[in-house]
Amino acid sequence: MALASPCIGVCRLDPAQRFCTGCGRTLREIGDWPEASEARQREILAAAAPRAAAALAGDSLPQITATTPLDTRECEPRPRMENRLRQG
Image (cartoon, rainbow, N blue to C red; front, side, top):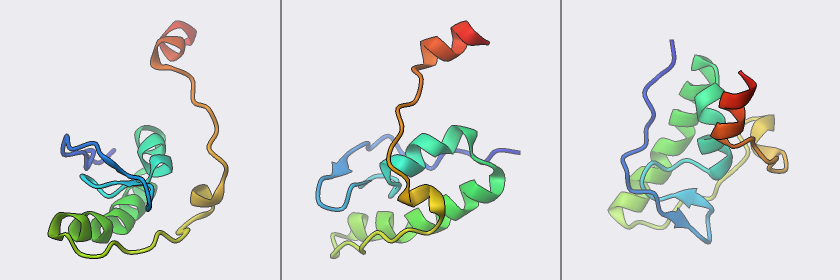
């Protein structure tokens, strides 16, 4: 069963750290979320929580480190939702 998205509707990317200051996820984690397994979603939540908490508190933001091989890949273009709907 998929977990609920951690998105809180404050979609603002920190340019230095490259993660959303609302939910704490990186662009890769945001992109992976819809198709990620529940285990992967839990990994994303665990990695994002300290980033989001630090951003909310205005503390210095933790450095992003690769938690899984997915985080170290080059970003690959994802098909737009309209294309996915046409294919399926």
